Amino acid sequence: MIIDLRSDTVTRPTPGMLDAIMSAKTGDDVYKEDPTVNALEQKMASLFGMDDALFFPTGSMANQAAIKLHTQPSQQLICDKWAHVYNYEGGGVSFNSGVSCKLVDGHRGMITAKQVVENINPPDFYHSPLTTLVCLENTTNKGGGACYELDEIIKIKKVCLDNDLGLHLDGARLMNAIVANNEDTKQYGSLFDTISVCLSKGLGAPMGTVLMGTSSLMKNAIRVRKVLGGGMRQVGFMAAAGLYAMEHQLQRLQEDHTKAKQIATLLQSLPYIKKVEPTQTNIVIFYMQDDFNQDDFINALAAQNIRISDMGQGKLRVVTHHDYTDSMHSKFLDILSSYLN
Image (cartoon, rainbow, N blue to C red; front, side, top):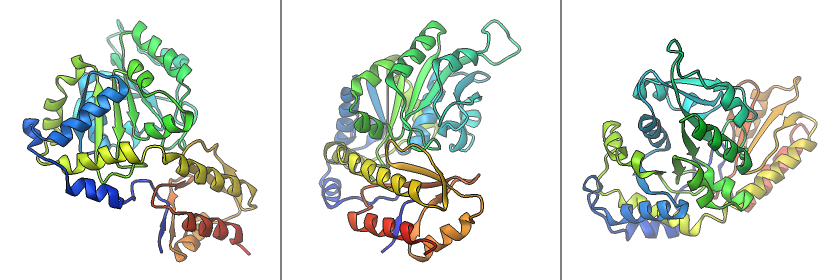
């Protein structure tokens, strides 16, 4: 039995999801004739109260398309220094859009309205890039699944309106935040110009992200998706997995959050652990004491078929998900407790 806690992307389709995939009605999505894709896009747009939605194969492609829709070459976006669009999308911001990033030293991957104001380049100062976009991430990946407060997002939105800036949300794990905080999806739809929601992380679909936005921006989304190589054919099989995930596997995200908090609580009590970041959703970030070798710890876990992530600079990560069962959870807690004994 392998206990894989490196990411919530390692999940496999449930039996119910496989049935939904096999029975999906399909067509050619490049012609917009796949009924299951169209149903997923309509469902997501309606859920968030946004004008339009488009199915993408990956979250990175959806984010990159959103940035392209918002910006022109030589312009600049504002994001946290840990943002996924900067750290984990292969330099796509500069390669695909010719845009630079103004990196903000936020808190656990989250920035404030005050920081946004401080990092807007003067629009009439032609020596610096023109600031045109703010990108937020909720929950934050490198920030350990931290969730933005809606009040802060509302303040950031006002700054964007006052300064004619677009506002994009990398919502790869947005549904985790919404479930954890019992929030309203439509409130997010009212605040952002574009939102990407990933279906292949905690929701457990094999692939897919939906990009939603205002009609003025989304009218060009399918063209940008084509340019990025994202045109797909009978992809309704995968859209069916996404529909199933939204209808059957959304509320169970709370189980992942509960297990993550239990892991965090145990880690805080162990003598070889120096620090555990606050745990709000399904990601646990922790650090070992300075006199302990983290490679030895990772290897000891691997010897017992347990996989976790080393994020560098002493940061270790555990991510819970629906393939991480109750029996796996009990075993993992026991192994953590008995390490060094």
